Length: 98
Ligand SMILES: [Zn+2]
Image (cartoon, rainbow, N blue to C red):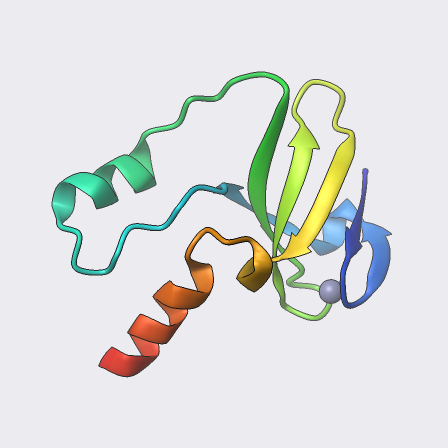
């Protein structure tokens, strides 16, 4: 399996770490319910899904990979901050509170 990092180009999957299903991140002050759902509840459906991967043996970027979980076809890869799922907002909120 090969993943094309937007910064580094096509690399072997072993350079990346799977980080879970890509879903909208709750606001930091959303409370226990939304965070419990986000962390623990998964649909685990077959077919094309969005996933978080980190290029931890390369540039370190978080990526949103659209992958077919049946065929393992890599359909699309975008940088995490361009995913529109709130990663950039969550990072900015965390930095504001530090
Ligand atoms: Zn990279």
